[in-house]
Length: 328
Image (cartoon, rainbow, N blue to C red; front, top):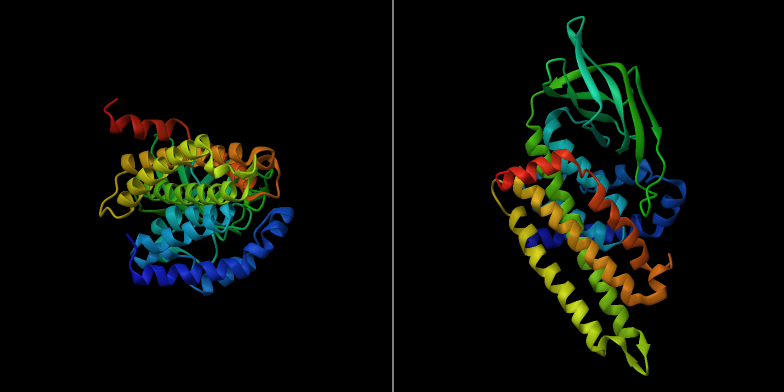
């Protein structure tokens, strides 16, 4: 799946995150945001904006390493920016992060241009975004794409309540009050597919990380004088979880390597990956016993963040895509 260039890039990303993110992540959680200086440095080193490289595997490497390092807020930010927004904006993209608002916005023409009104809650990258990519509905029911500068008149964003296990993730409540916007020509379905696949890649990396953490733990933890890894139930539960992780990783990697990923296949990958992530972290918490519920243990933090991957974006649109795939 990955060649020597990707693995060299992986090593660079891993070293960068170990030096610039992992030691500070608890502070970012406490402050409720990843600082802009981190993203500026990441962009300088070439770890942001990877969708422009023309090879989705580089962006996948960044997502995988962020999850492996226990940095889900970094992975989710990248999935939105690189997986969804950047391919649509192309040359219109500026130097900062991009937020996406898909629901709750109406568009109308005024004085020869377009203006947006409405808003949405818990928008990823919403507080610090340099640009907003917005899908807005017109009076005739059409959905059009627009871009809005982050400092546009009438645009308001306020930090939203922190999400469980994702305190460092920039989420904001965003409102448009007759904001001037620029119309974009882009395929929203393809952009959603890119985001779904990015989330699937991140979820599977999280599942593999949770499995690795748990396997290491059961080898170290002893009961009745021997490691709990030697107990039949432990081996049965982990081997079954490992089989699911292996199979779903192959599916997601196959989607990543596909020349033309469809919205239906990307949505399926996302749903399956989120379910396997939930299985991996749930198994990990159970085998950690009481320690699995202590915040200082990585499996507890992984368990908290994993719920977001199942809940985020689930709704009528995702159901419609998946229903189309089976002819409903």
